[in-house]
Image 1 (cartoon, rainbow, N blue to C red):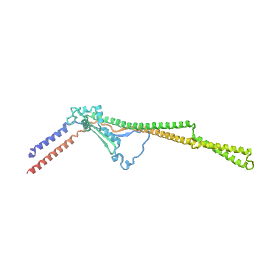
Image 2: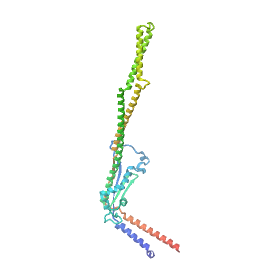
Image 3: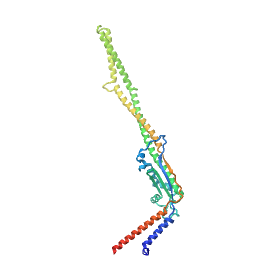
Image 4: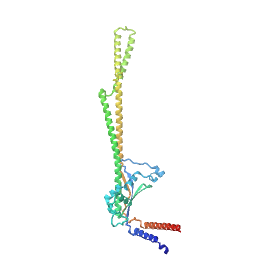
Length: 368
């Protein structure tokens, strides 16, 4: 035993163990931990109830139970550990001053208020912890401060700022969506107006409200004339069997037949002609313009309906933090874990000392 105690390395290990125990047991400043549990949810203000059952979560452990984290919770987790939030916390609670108080031990405190943001951020990450529970889908937020009030204030501000950030992201996405739909609706309204104006201009240019109706009327006239013509031809055939062909009665019937044939030919020319300036061409152009107007009107109605649905969906994109456990006001400093840390450091010192003696013994054996 005396031989062992004469070795400088043993005394060095004893001094290191005493120093670590003294630091963790007495010198290390107490840190208070405030804890909160939250879950991100979407508000449903559209009046639509969602009664769908997640069968995958019930039968196969899907959803949060299967370890698939929801994007909202992960986005919130990333923001709560971001530099932006750290800057806002510092502006609100003056964290730099709190973490550099002179009564905090030199190892636990931040060295200077003027540290760069990079070093401040590294220190900040050691004082907060945000974890996602895969089973329950809950975010667990733990914040440390050198006083109970500051630890709770940090946690409370993180919840408020996290909800504000998530709402701003959701609202921006919703506004972009509504703006896009509004642009589509405006373009559809413009196309609809242009199509209807083209139809009206064509009607005014042709002097016809409906070429189709006019064509139908002409066909009816032609049918009536052809019916009358058939009757006259039958009458002439009967009369020619017992009357002289040069008699006034036959001549009158022949004159009427020629007049009807001329009128029928004239009416048919209004419908069809090689020149192309006919009613059937007008009907074709009118139908094309009318179809374009009806299609643009239907598209405009659909975009209007889509816009209204988009506005309702945008209104339902608000996020709400469901606080399961409010930020606690700690009464006992949970950090540092004095006994555990002292034990770990002593074991580490003994391990290093043992390795050193083992290496020294190997070297001596090789020398011999």
